Length: 236
View 1 (cartoon, helix red, strand yellow):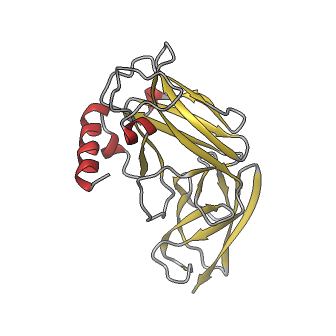
View 2: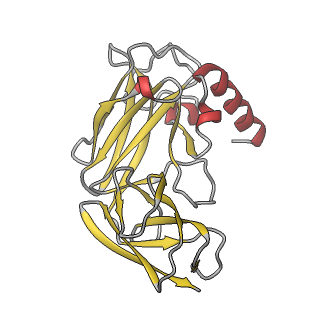
View 3: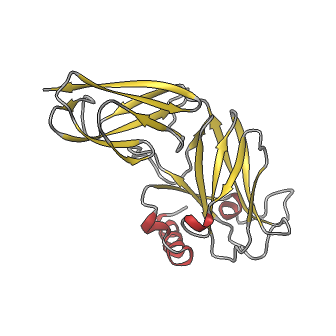
């Protein structure tokens, strides 16, 4: 997709979907299969109400500065929201998963969301599924592939710090990275973060804190049905 086409799509979503770009600055955005190819996928009957397909959007990890034009993989055992918007009518749209044993559509949260629709997904097992948005008669608005991967490790980063070090007495941020086997960033918005050090949650994977005068700070994370202990050194 050219930059001009991409910019045009964002503006059309902004005005047709309500507040997509303004409220979703920390989102990943990706066209559905129908929107990408301009064709109805094989084996599907497509809705005439959305001839240009849909754009899907999801959470962007806190310090992931890479390309935002694709959805991130889901962490096995975790959960995430998925939004969708388009230029056609999406009244009474329904969302399903082609492989609910990998990803289950757990809840429709459209009234709370951005754009035309929003659902919460639960990632149950490693694998890939097609998330399908259909009309009440089962005709496809669009679909997108999502992959689930097991968390291999968790790392803590200090944005803009060359050596990932905190400084006593400073106000700083920490981002917790959920990483797959090959280092891909994974999403689990159900992750919980606890610590003996006081902190303020900023997003599902980011916290702010006044760095205490001690050797290190330690956090306990629960993500992907596992517990992870993460520590960062403190410089005085």
